[in-house]
Length: 79
Image 1 (spheres, rainbow, N blue to C red):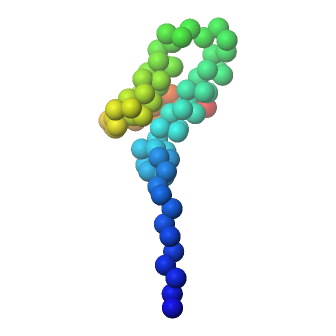
Image 2: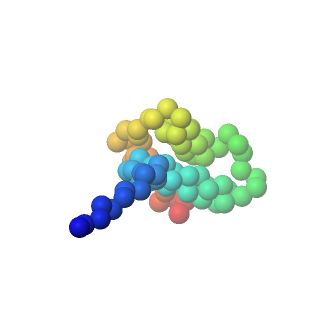
Image 3: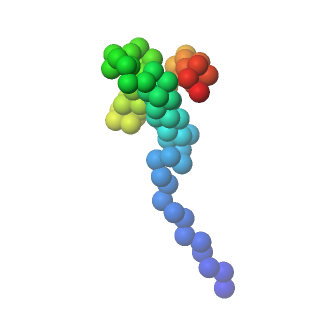
């Protein structure tokens, strides 16, 4: 008799958008490290990334194509 494998519950990071959110969090960290302690909390790049993270986590927001392109450009600038 075969045993049925139990499926583990899906984590938030297992989905495509969960992975995108984690990548945005890494981008925010890289921006903070790149700018150092003198970074303004109102820095445009950091604020844009932080807002997208907040939208995705709390409002189930999905990035548009233009936002994905901007995030990719920021990733290339700060990574």
